[in-house]
Image 1 (cartoon, rainbow over the protein chains, first blue to last red):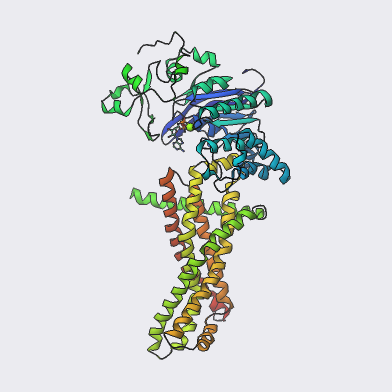
Image 2: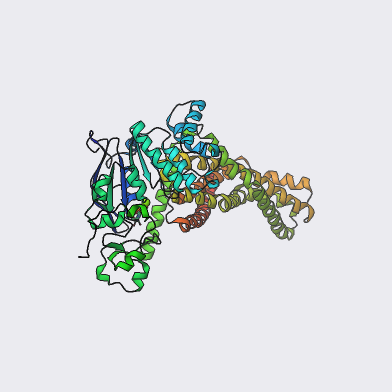
Length: 319
Length: 262
Ligand SMILES: Nc1ncnc2c1ncn2[C@@H]1O[C@H](COP(=O)(O)OP(=O)(O)OP(=O)(O)O)[C@@H](O)[C@H]1O
Ligand SMILES: [Mg+2]
């Protein structure tokens, strides 16, 4: 899957410091044309930041980012604007414009970037809104619809111009299981029927294994493993096992606040990171925990389905 | 010492940001027709919706000002002259900046909050990614709407203020309406009216630019939105009183030049 033609997205040794911390650390990966590349990793590990680099909303301190072979880190604003037309982006919160209705939100890229007639635009908007099941709610404002609907609206808008490359920041979080499954089917449909290249950041392991051509596992600002779903499932890397099993296997865990209170030895701190509970920037570090603590801090993404995916050789001992 | 250095540095950075954003927005002024709906909407929010409160304010300010000057003038038996003083003060000073104050409190603060929440909710980023320049899509319609409605409200407010002064002059100071307006006419000439409009245009553009730029620089969630809104009010008010002083000083020079003293 990764070898049909030159890569659409190419990160080479991309580093970025934010707020005094190394968020991206010599990050390198490639996304091939037509594949669905899924990025998984702990909350706060820099997944959204890497997406922001991909669309030029953030500039790396170091390294090279190529889109369709063009280096974007040195582009002028005009060049960036042109480059961005290749993208559709679904933001984590949908990011619909508050004073426009759903219809107008999806229509916006068409109004700004095409010479379509009003009638033609309405047809396109209807098609996209029907795709995400929101046509009946077209006249509502973002404040009047649920979080999941906002996200689907954002998806319809991202697809309005039929981009060749779509980025999704957590498309299924906040959606009920049925709609999350619909979004998965939609993503697979876009790949199979339109040959779209898609990059998906997700916390939903089941969805990741359903839609991915390849999966990249993000850990402390680098990709510690990239591979097909099968390769990732069979991974020997403890951090990867730990993550995809929702903390049940592998030996690395997040230190809970309770563990801090109990005085987990600070020497075991490996790195500063965002607190998984509050999302605030603070010293929440990754540390080695006892088995009980690991079980207690199992993240909410864990489910029975994912645990059944564990390979046999995942019994890692603490070093 | 370190703190005050940072404060100065931040102020300079903020001013620079605001100026750049304003110029960028003005660079997109060619899109006025394309963005007419947005602009009309802003004019409604800024103008129509602020009309009642502006009128109320200016009416009472005119009334108080007439009372205050009436008390002093009565000592010299010159109560008839209140019309003249009220008009000259209203047209060039009270009208433009009291209207500006009302608008900053009512419009500037919420404009910053609105754009701040857009920033926090990634809406501004989404615009950037869609290759829609926020300076054109968000800022330009607000600056244009504000620049049109600020002076318009100033005209209405000033007239109401003069009328309010007249009511007090007539009912409480015993000045005939005809005397009031006879002297009122001498209170302002064309230059004064232009000057009042110029002032209110400057204040309006300043307030809009400050609101937009503080909104666009919002970070840190809901708290950040509140901070942006508060900073907008403080900075706009400060700039308005400062620019007002400069413009009044400049007026004096122009006036002397026109009347041949210089
Ligand atoms: N503009 C910024 N300034 C400073 N720090 C930032 C900025 N943006 C992100 N960060 C920090 O970078 C780290 C990575 O953030 P990012 O949003 O990429 O995480 P994530 O992997 O997407 O997490 P999640 O799964 O919760 O969305 C976080 O610690 C965050 O605090
Ligand atoms: Mg994220």
